[in-house]
Every structure is written in C-alpha cells, then in structure tokens.
Image (cartoon, rainbow, N blue to C red; front, side):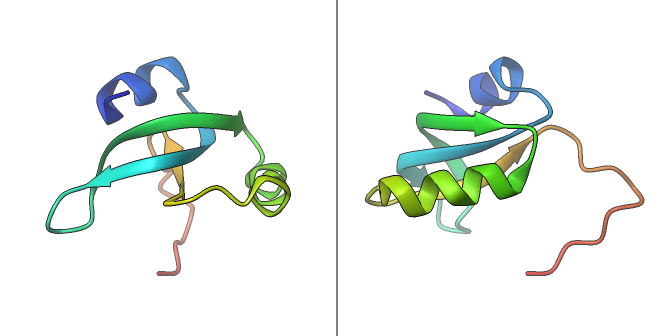
Length: 71
C-alpha cells in the first residue's frame, strides 16, 4: 500500500508496517499495515509480539505543533 493511501485510510493513527519500502532518504514510500492504533504504546507492544521483518512504526497524520520529536 502506498504511503499516501495509508495516511488517508489510517489518519491520526500510529501504524505498524511490514515489508516497508523507503527512498534514498529513508522516507517511507509504502508497506503492509499489520496493526494500527491511536496510542503509540499499543503499537510498540504489537511490534514486540509480532516481530515482523523490515518493519517501521509511523504516524499517519499531521503531528501537532505542541509535540516534540526525538530522532
């Protein structure tokens, strides 16, 4: 599934992707959604349970201005 479609279908949710495709800048281009939830902690728990290959956790929505991200 393309990242643009994931953002529409799973808006404002954290998504766990497997078989992730990325570009040369490591931006997500697409993947298979295997779990989603508005709470990131639930998605991390599912990641530990499933342990998928080539996975990523991404937020499918606009990040609020009052949120700080650590990379």
